Image 1 (cartoon, rainbow, N blue to C red):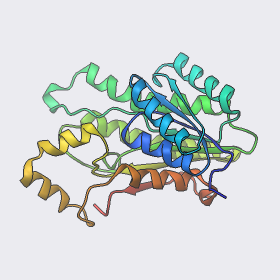
Image 2: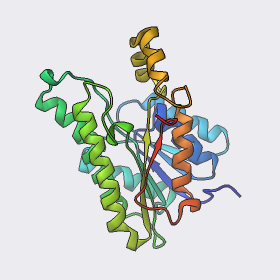
Image 3: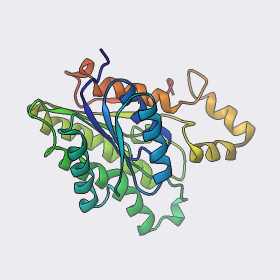
Length: 251
């Protein structure tokens, strides 16, 4: 039997990259998956098509997770399609560079509205939809939330530190209800078009220097992150709570 047979999962920001890989991996293990997207309907539809082609169950639901009304609709659609929730993966996020001298209020709020407020609103709404046995929340943080990282990501770094703090706080608050809350913190990745453009921008010398910072001498992939999420979402992690797992190749 697959690890997630008869489970229901919502994956936010699942139309591409890491989120898409998480959604397909959860479906491969038997979960019915709600593929959330903000604007990329075509991408979300492709993920759903891939899951259903392999015999799984999935639907795509548009929602901006930084908006309470959208969050309520997302969870309502999930409930109508598949019943009570078992797994929430808070993956939706935004990653922007800005030199410190160019940081604006708008830049700050874009980072925190989606990366932090969205996670908090989704987790709050999930409480209404988990069954009596509880469930699992998995937050996608970042190596930038564990310590200093690249220059030019001050607001992102602060937001991902907030995700780490929220993970530990929510684990403390929700554990008595049978709900575990853990986080996966990706290191340097090649997981979508944006990361590929960023990678290309480093140039050959910069790429070599970056890889040499990683013990395993390669960048991470979306599958690496999906595998870690699968562990936290499964019964194998039933007594694992409030943990931050760095998936960074030993940076």
